[in-house]
Image 1 (spheres, rainbow, N blue to C red):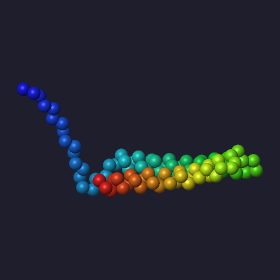
Image 2: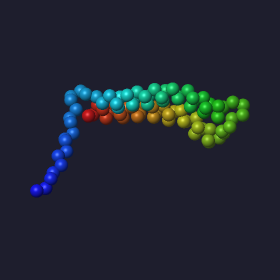
Image 3: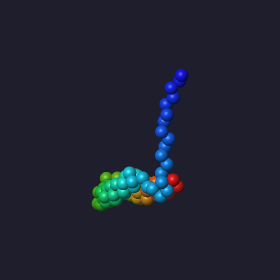
Image 4: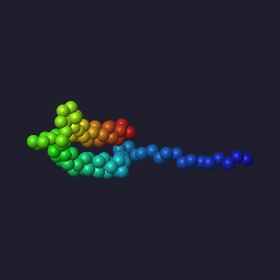
Length: 88
């Protein structure tokens, strides 16, 4: 006689239910991102601007793009997570 393990099936989510942990994590992600944005922009400005910039040339151009990509990440990541929540 072989013993058989009965695994409980995954419980289905009720219609319209939202995982509160995902929403809380998303809120914390956005909050920390917004709080750190001025720090990042001021550091980029300090490194690339002023009378004696520490970073010049092509490196300065790329460094000036860091806040742009940071903002794009702050927009795209929540959008993807919201899409996944909506799709489910």
